[in-house]
Image 1 (cartoon, rainbow, N blue to C red):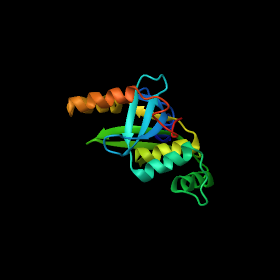
Image 2 (cartoon, rainbow, N blue to C red):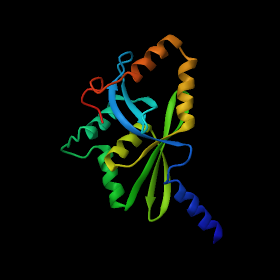
Image 3 (tube, rainbow, N blue to C red):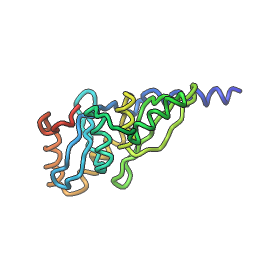
Image 4 (cartoon, helix red, strand yellow):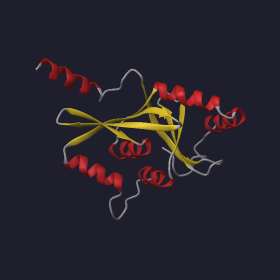
Length: 180
């Protein structure tokens, strides 16, 4: 019996911010001027760190629809998931961009159903689209922030300096209609 209680307490702690997690907000959505691919811009709540995550066009559309509060005639995938979670009495507690491996970001969605926490592997774009729809916190593991900075210094230095200056200089006009 004690083992079960310990497990449940460990599971519950997944719903709170871990010391290694940095709370982020979606700053906006824009197109990369070099690759012409959509980028979700995350910024920590203190405003010191920016994390760009390149996503696919369809995934960016799902995020943009929620940023602009566009209602579609039929439910989109993330709207359907929101409805399913409500129907199963499950709550989205947080999403965490948890890993960066081989230039690919990974995320975990934390669900709470009747006091049991469930972690679900996810693409960051899906996790972010759900977080927007369900108004839940977004976190990024510190090691992901460090790894993404390290990865940028390992590749083409001139190009990365240019991209870093571009990201740091972002203002609301640069984000167009997709700003938070």
